[in-house]
Length: 89
Image (cartoon, rainbow, N blue to C red; front, side, top):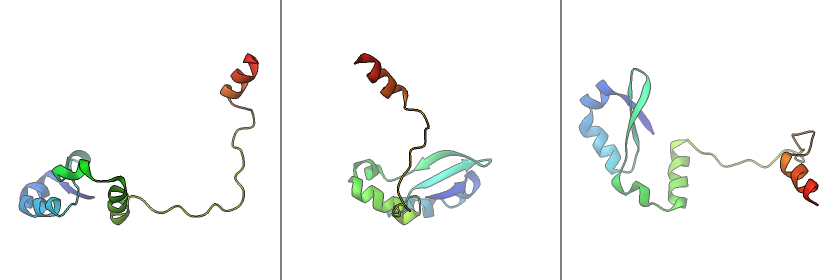
């Protein structure tokens, strides 16, 4: 994903369209706040695998690393659902 200010987007509109045609996503910001997104029309029709690959290529997603040791419970008390189910028995 590439972010351009409104001024840059206006000045480089043809370049941005070339990037969008090649499958890239463009975000336009106004005073530092992201306000618009330009993406290919068929971007909503890609397979989940292609979407994940695109996000990995853009650096948005990364492959998970193997856990370091055993996972431990975070909560000290059983959750509300467990207590509720126990009360129903």
